[in-house]
Length: 143
Image (cartoon, rainbow, N blue to C red; front, side, top):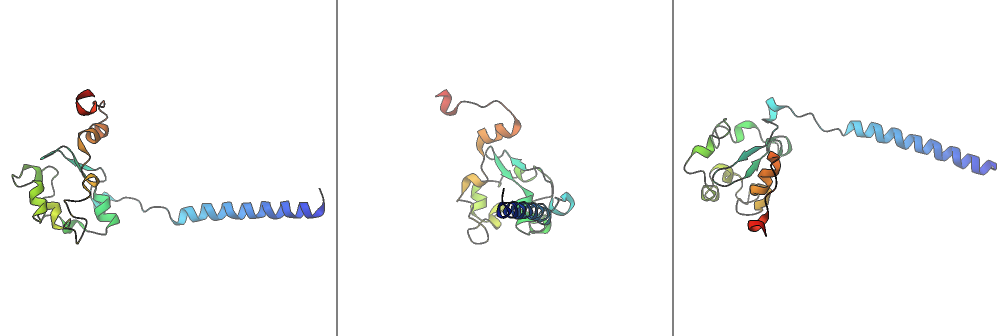
């Protein structure tokens, strides 16, 4: 190996080492903030099974990611108890379309409208079964 090749190899090793250090240090700098349930609400998703099975709600998307605080929804739109809204007779998709519950923000202006992008929230029976670890059922009556 001649002198030029040794110099190039040494340069390449140094460059690789510097790249590795930057990667490791940079990875630490952009690490995601630790989730704090006291500040952002329960970490586990809430799954509504009424009026349809199943709709998923994640506090993190609304608080940590969107910057909303708890008072944005509680206690004006939702009581601070899981399952409370599902007990109300008016907890329907029509209510959302009319600006109640999730529809207060999911109006097409503040956030996507509640009558669009349905699969963002609606995970359906199969999605619910997967979340629960239940065996998959055949679609369309076993076809």
